[in-house]
Image 1: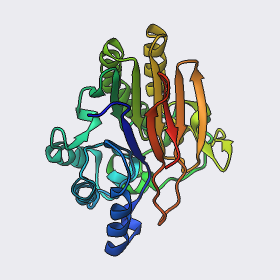
Image 2: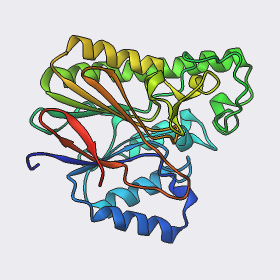
Image 3: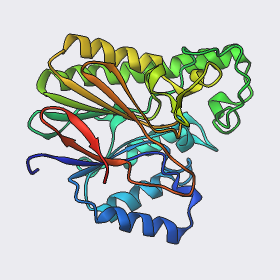
Image 4: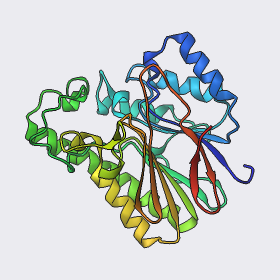
Length: 277
């Protein structure tokens, strides 16, 4: 791969809201971007369409696609069913689910790692929150269960994500100067943006993942000489947050039926930065 790597970033593209012509037009538009690889931070389609859309991306873009899934990608099915289907569809070097992959070295000193993450009900007020997300009706494991069980399940999903991510982070940081972390759910309270503001206590339980944030901070503290860039989405609100001096977080803005290229990630003097396309 050439020096000064360029990574195209997509998030919350929700291609199931487009017709076939719209999907083709979007992929064709992306194909003209001057990038070496693509990262996708979740919410690509729904359970019955996500694999087809991933195939269209990798075939139409002609570059490796490194992705995580979002909550919508499990809709109308279950985590238990979608997980093995997606794991079986990956192709090393072409279509890579970061949940099941070790660090991807894009060029000397720059690595990509990631995991879906999950709203783990540890920030905000999960007991008092009156939000009724579609997740609670469209993902089998979260459907029609008592609030206490929902919180416990969310805690467990966040812990699972952090457990997968932590060793990959350490491996990447041991061998890289810069690490790009791709996840769907913002890993810090301050990164859960919507409409120019950080989310309140009703929203935070389901729109932030404390467990993955803690894993990132532990690694960043041990590797103070490594710069980490986190790319996430989920909230549909664009924002920037610095969790610590060497951890920058970009949260994607998004609108249904209007997918966009969020930006291009480049090495800017030893730090990974997101530039507008």
